[in-house]
Length: 464
Image (cartoon, rainbow, N blue to C red):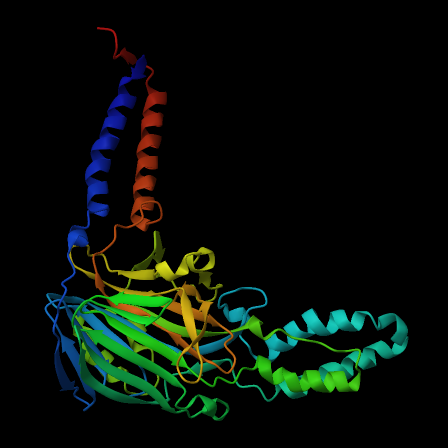
């Protein structure tokens, strides 16, 4: 076997360069073996900002958690108590009603607004039904169609906007209070939407809650015979609860009744299960130096100060890395694929890890189960429904949309969790660092090939 001397030297140089670089860019996760403590009794404190706003603080040896005592923006701020250099933020932006005729998850192109509903109803239901009358109506067809569409537009004018922003609404906080029963101990507090300044969303008042539990000890709780969950000490579980939601798609029933009365042959049914409700959450992290400004912003007029200060690089969703430094909000939202293909959903959780460039400390995460409970009025379970999710990079922070299918007049309950965990290793095929390594190797190999072409001298590395 013969190999060019320059080529051999070039490849040796490539290996020497690659090894330390790969080691630096893809470090081992030293926090991976961290054991979660079974008990973390939390100290509850409250503090005032310079503007006089009150915040509650839970502090344990592992985690420090802050949330507003009252205000316009439900949000949670937390960090690893022994390293406050990275502060994680989850902000609740609002809920969005959307259509699921085309995609089973939220996409901004299919919000349940007047224009989109008109387009979908017209194309998928009215036009196919009218096509059977086209030959018999002849020249009257267009006038017939215009009458129907004009009536549809009239009914659509009464719909509420698809997006209910939580900023500007007034929220009421009850608690925190310490709850102890048997071996279970947690701090309980609830955010309740009390008043909405938007007329068409007044029905949401007192009907949206974020019910929170901050656990002092690792606990398994049984909700019913089909569902139990374990929450680790120092984690915050919150139940997102919506009741008495007024669905835009339901308001089409009056139009459909009129259409049937006007012409019994135009009996159209629009499936209500093709609507959904998405909870919009922003995920970001900031420096501890920016905390005071963020705390003031959370209780003031609607702004995106948190997002503007965020230093977030990306998120790790399952085994995928997603860079959030770019602003991709002009593009379509991306589905969290695991929520579309899971089968044993009761055993699974979808976890999103913040990526902040540090791997030697516990890092923040948000997780949720890919199903939700639909409840009777008395709080017992009517059924379980699948939950999907989508996301999009928004410039150093992530927009996450947790998506719930139509639940009619029942109550929706879903239980995400936030906390700290060992940093998972970055997926080695998708990270920007690995791309940089591959580019460097390509350059080195190119240099080696050029050197090989310039000199043809070879050496025999097998024979003496």
